[in-house]
Length: 244
Picture 1 (spheres, rainbow, N blue to C red):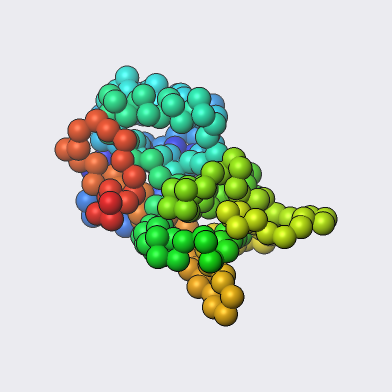
Picture 2: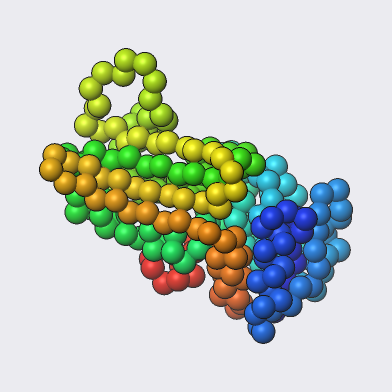
């Protein structure tokens, strides 16, 4: 399968290149970086894998739709307009769009949903923490946002009204429906995520820690291979892994 890498000079771009070269079913068709023309690189490619910045997504989508190239998008931090553009492009080409391509993290998503169904938030207080390297530009991470979305869905809460991003000062007693969100930044941490359910007398913690970007890169290549012969549509890594 012929794959294009965007952001080749970035940490994830280099990891994706390594993952493609390690997989006997894939080869690098071309690589792209800032201020270069993407459109000709997509000509003849089967799919492109993107871990860049959200402001590049609109150009990526336009070129992919024009060349009928499948997309794997791992970039996070999109605004509502950019998210709508991804959904629109997926009516024309197949797109796997996920906040995290790690098999372990997607298992964490699955476990979080089932734990929230069982434990709820009437007796258990729920907190989410994530830590990444000092260079990460968005907070909370896309993975943490997905965890919060799952928790909101299962507890019938709202991201806008029930998620507390850190606490400072005299906050008063913790509201029952509140979900705490805490983002830590420092060093070279690849990505740590924890969902904590705390009740009187017991606590359940679900944690995933990534020590190498290759786990994300290999997952993205797996997603690209999964897209072969898939019709236009918006897919998630949960679909790739059969967890839906």
